[in-house]
Every structure is written in structure tokens, then in C-alpha cells.
Length: 447
Image 1 (cartoon, helix red, strand yellow):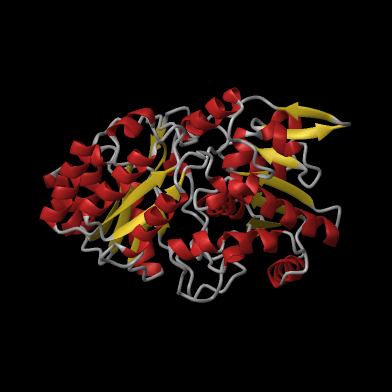
Image 2 (cartoon, one colour):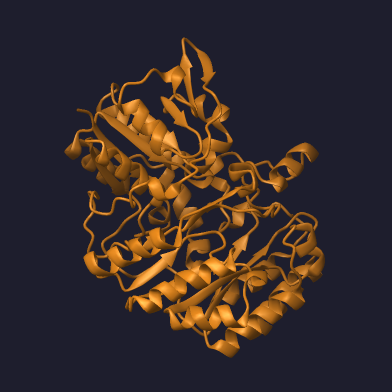
């Protein structure tokens, strides 16, 4: 029986911080493999056994350190990864990859091949799903799984022929082979809960309370790759299945804080109310955080969310300019944003706002509007981004066609908390620094 190691490559650690959350994608794959008798472990190479994190401004400031670590193969992080891989001695390694972790994933794959060239390296995740042709041309990777990886990975490990497994991309005698387009999983309830016990890392400071109640997003924001990845389709778990996982986390893991990782947790308002009511009825002693849109909130819902343990709502504001919001295809305006913020304040739920600058053709005045509008919201925390035209987004396609701005050397520049990702050269750098200063403007702690 093959030994399988699933790896989340380092990213925030390269900037002097870390990410101690579980990878739900790898967790679901591991759970399916384990349920079918395979020996599987997960290694979060972005984990450090401590609970303190850098704030966002420190992450922005450490981006150049990040690049130096990427170009230093003898750095202790890469040496640790080699030791961990050697200690488990896998037959197969699966690596999860975002656009910003492309080079980090490549380095991990190269370490695997250095240990044993016969170890099969499989990559999946957002970037290889959207750019499979470009990714498979990298000799560090043997095979790509596009989109949802649970059942293709299982089929591979069970020895099924490659050309009979949907969603694969691989090379055969120098020719790139695409198998048939994968279908999305229609019944997510049929999947086991994500594996949380199979980590090679210590779990003392592991944030194991991440939960996703649905996959996909129906919206088409111009800066987001979700429309290309999920085709604006959504699959939702049943209320009973979600609550069963929450009960398991509360009883088995004593989890006190749950992070709902859905793009829009309150997309279906009635369903969200039913989840809240089940949490209340079952007396689950949990606190939780979610992300959502300002137009998917109302007073009754927020009251139920608070009663069910919601301690923070994160809302995508993005801009203080209605013109930029329209060009982003956010389908909201400042009036709707203020309405949602007032509701959150009335009910008494702390909130984080996501803000972004650097949109193509954005003016200094529009950046100023975002800074001033952000301050007027009096959020508990400000999550700040520089626009990154990720592969597969409408912004990326438009900039590629126009041929301006995409003069970045490597995919690792495509990260939304990097000064290197400023593609709008007309914005005053002093305004960008003032935007970053919002990090110190919030009145609450980061969660």
C-alpha cells in the first residue's frame, strides 16, 4: 500500500510569520484516502508552533525577505521540509498550490525529487486548475489534478489508468495529455469530514476549527478567480451535515472558535438561519467567524448569528469609490456598505472590512476616497490588499490583452499583500503608505 504525504507549502513563514490553519482541500483528500485504507499524512510547511502573528503592515514590509528566502535553498525552512519528508518516506507527494505559492511548491517538489526521483509529485489547487498547461510544463511536477481532487486522487492511488480518470493533466513522451473535463461533486455531504488527526506537525497551536459549508460562488467580481474556477456555480452542504461537523469539533476537539471559510457564508439567508437555530437548539458552546457580502445581511439574521455565537463578520468593502466598485463588478455601492455596517453596529457584532487599492486606472482621488471611507466605517480590523491580477481573473485577462502592467518575472509576485504587485503606476506611493497605515486604525484585534 502506497504511503502518501500531502503538503501545504510555506508562504507566510517566508515573511517571518506563519499560517497554523488546516488545509481543508488537503484534509478532504486525506479523509477520502484514509477511508479507503491508504496511509496518508498531511504536512503544513507554513506552520510554526507559536500563536503570535505579524500584522498586515509587517507582512507587507517583509516581502523582500520572502523573496530572499525563496532564492536561498539552504535556508532552515527548506532544510526542515527535507527532514520531514525523509522522516515519513512517502511513495507519493501531493502539493496544494495557489498562484502566490507556485515557486514555493516548485522548491518543495525539487526537494522531493532530490530525496528520491521516483516519488510521484502531484499538484492541485487554484493555480494548476486554472493554468494546467503552464504548470505541467514545469519539470518539477509529474501530474496535475484540476478542480476538486478527492476522487481523482483516490482513483490514481487505486491504480486506475490515467486516461480513464477525469481532471488529470500529465506528460506522455513529451506530449501534454488532458483527460476529460471533471464534473463537480454534486453531494458534498457524501464526503467524510476533513482529516484533522493526520498532521505531521504538532497540533498544540494548530487552528483546526476551519469549516466550509459550501463550494463555489455565484458572483463575478473582476479581481477574483472564483468565476473561472467554479463557473459561478455553488454546491451547499445540508444543515444537518454542517451541524454534525460542528458537534464533532466541539466534543472531540473541544474547539471554541470556528472559522467558516465559505466565500459568502450567508449566501442563502434562510439556510444560515437554520444553521444558527441548530447551534442554539443543541447548546453548542462555540464562537465563530465568517466572511460574507454586505447585501446578504439583515437585522434578523444578525441577531440570530450573534445568539448562535458569531463573534466577528468579515465583509468585502474593497473600495470607497462607487465607480471602482462598479468596475470591480461588486454589485454593491457605498450606501449598501454603510447600511450593513450600521446593522452590525446596532446588533453589536465586531467586524473586519476588506479594502483594496491598485485597480487599473484607479486615480489618486479614488484611493483617497477608499482611505477616508474606510476610516468612517470604524471597523474593528482592516484587512488590506494591493490588487493582484491572479491568473484566471477578468483583470488578468484584460491586462494581458492590453499588454500593460504584467511585467512580473515570477508567479510569486502575484500576491495581494506585496508592494511589488502594484500594477497601477499612477498611484502616489505616499497614498499607498497611508492606505497601509489603516492597519493601525482598527479598534480591535486580528482574528
